[in-house]
Image 1 (cartoon, one colour):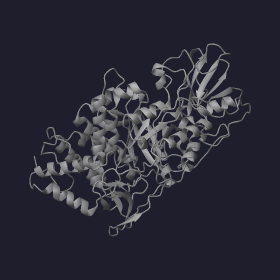
Image 2 (image 1 turned 180 degrees about the vertical axis):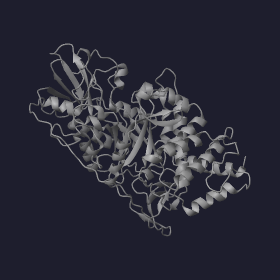
Image 3 (image 1 turned 45 degrees about the vertical axis):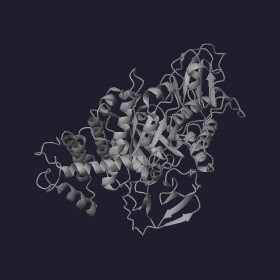
Image 4 (image 1 turned 60 degrees about the horizontal axis):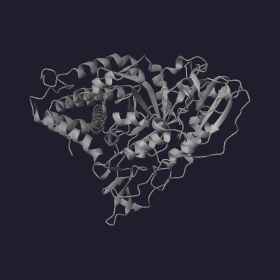
Length: 603
């Protein structure tokens, strides 16, 4: 084996791992994780429902900070779409026209994907690297900004796959970091959707370890009512019932978030799930309709969503305007509504305001929602996406927090109840929007000499400034051009890089900014060619010198021991933007590295 190839590959892997390990919990300050994130899930299947049609054109580009396409599936260490959805993906990409900072994320997995493919991929380092590299190729081909893993759940199948999930997260992040180092572009983002139920958390996640590698952790704090259908119960209450005991003590958002924090997750990385839909029950007695009342089973399907036991918010608010009674639980921070033998527990604008305030007070990373259950078509005359919009308003107006967060679990809370009945009616009105083709732009930056100047600490704009020294240098989570230095007395000194230079936490110096990840126009006709390239790369034998991993004049290592290193230098100097060439080069290095027996991660 060519030693130059191995050395270079190990160096790249060392950069990919050591860089963010030195920072304790990752370099999230460089990737926009400053709190106030609004992570919006786009259901690819919602377009098949009857009634109001949910399409990408209805989404305000500034409504969300992250837009997650759900789902693709994982199969044979690769990413596969459930259907040809290129038109939808293009419309989602077009939202960047009006919001260049919108992050488009691909979610792989989900309940329908099952667990077998995840287990197979995560069972060996070779499979993990193969999947991670295929993910890089797929994400770049379809112009996503990152990947979200939705394995439901690593420890919920009778056998704990906690270590497998940890290795999967670490391996994917490792390859994402290498791709960023080689291409000098922003690193692809990595997040995961995780359970909110403590017994499943314990069996599924090494919380401190995965927190080092994930940019955001999407905690699914909804559908927490359990499997018991003999009594009504809120599925996403903020706090517990006073009468709760046993496992029922876990079935509230505050307990779940506090549990994740107590287990070692940084609050700034936790994204709390807020439900834009309600869970329904059929009452055993029409005259007994409070939370905890006897039920004969789940409720009937909604008119539009068509799923037993569930109503979208736009269906609920329409019911309220047509005679349903409603009440607000001041202890659990949740709503109930009933009509005849049908009962629903749900959130509304009032509870969303209270929960968004809770997220700010806890200094969490933000909130997550399913877009297609909110009132996306303004059925109830409250504006489009009223629930998510009010969270955006709360996040945008909240003053910065200056105190360390508290993780104490309150037992009860009270609030002034709102009116309990609504009797107005409304007629749904259609919504239409248009989309303008996205212009392609490229920006260049001229660096200036590196110096530092002392400035007052930045605590504005809702960002969370550090309050204690951790190490010698820390990135400013609010401004990539600034950093914090710990003085000899332990005081925090706020400093700035000159010009357009940015703080490099890995090297502890001001550096050239990485190139912004620019996207070329998607060409569907080239997809088969890309698939063929990926097929060849995935099956390339790193020890077979007859198969050259290089393009152009470069052959497999053998003629010149420094050929790979010289090639790498030339590629960096010329700033080549040929993505296939970069990725082919990187694939070769990874195949060489992963063939080394029991390579130890740099410490």
